Amino acid sequence: MSRAPASWLALLLASLVLAACVRAPVESTPAPDRDDIAARLQADIDTLADDAMAGRKPGTAGGRSAYAFIERRMGEVGLVSGTNDPGSYWRLPVDLLATEPQSGQLVLGQGRRRVVVPDSDAAVYTPRRRALAFGGPGTGVPVVFVGFGDGSVLGDALAGAVVVMLADSGRDAARREALFRQRATAVLTVLPDAPALARLRAAEERPRLQLASEEQDHLAAWITEAAFADLLGARRWKSLKADAQEASFAPLELNLSVSIEATSDRREFQSENVIGMIPGSVPGSGAVLVLGHWDHLGECAPPEAPDRICNGAADNASGIAMMLELARRLKAGPPLARDIYFLATTAEEPGLLGIRSFVKDPPVALSGIVAAFNLDMMAVAPEGSAVGFIGRGQDPALDAAILAAIARRGRKVGDQSLADSFLQRQDGWALVQAGVPTVLLSATYGTRSVLDPFLATRYHKPSDEAAAVELGAATEDLLLHEDLIRQIADPARYPAKDSARP
Image: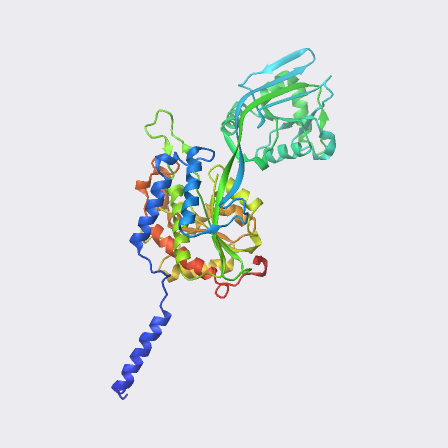
């Protein structure tokens, strides 16, 4: 083979170099200085996880300080209001209800006999400050035994009744709710033994926080089978239980007097979701949502502990810090076609309450959100860790974009079964249920060797302090999100499905 002339060889080499430059992945603008990024993340984590925030519990001064700080930082990075409400610039109010059981009493009677059932054999609960129900002979309120059923065969005939049902593990909650939907005044569940009652007490007697709009105005009681049989008579009770097992069983009225009373400490208050946005340059092309919860547990250690505050540095001051830094970088870079919303949610810890409130009354049409990225526990893994991919398999197009972005950045996907186990334990689950393609990408969930030590020593403990966060993989995760969001915010690179158009 003859050698090419030198001039042609030089031209060929120049062409190859130019082609390589064209194919090389282009870094986000502005080019990342990882030390600067880490410093800004640490500064926001330091503030949100400071003892002055007292653990950022909703409904406390520390919680109010937390969302006020987020509002200020959203303004500083150049976001505008995302509420679409001129009367509320940053805030989406979330009405919450806190309840804690105080007292309860169950009184049963048959004939001349009347028994105040001791606490060792009975428990009564209500979310109301005080609730009282009577039933039985002379009251005009029937006491109806439904066995293992839910009373649905009676329809409206159960309205106003006191209902007695047999416990059936795994089905009790749904059956009880069905009875209350039929407007039963109270439901008395007969439990098999004292250990079952103890488990019930452990579940019911802790303080609860719920959305005020989801309040269930119930009066519910539980009694051990031995105590119930003692009053009703062993032979009669044995006969009732046997009848309840028959396919032909029909609910029947009991000749039994019942008095049920309970009280609860109750507090209604308002917390806030906080939302800002970067308006897109192409109106009507859809939106991208970035979210993370700002709340944590407040004071969670015993009174005698030297440090009682659960500061929640990794969980989830780190997610909010990443959201703010992402907003800053996206705002500083080239214009984005789609709107980008940044949502800091309240009350994630007690049951995803803030995001559920958002889903019930969103300021942007959920159908217009082409993808959502949840940021939760982002500062645990060291640099070079695999990416945990929570939410994989929900949307093929989003999966493909994410996997390609992970590969572009020279990273790997971690333990998928580990990531999948967290799908329903984070805010993104409420969006997935509402049909919004939502993922959580974090090296925290990539391997058990990273996650398990954190869960064992710092998760929901006072030791989750700002000084203990690890920002190596967090910085890598931030740049991965920036890469992805820039792609997905471009309709030419990531077309919206017909169902995802506003």
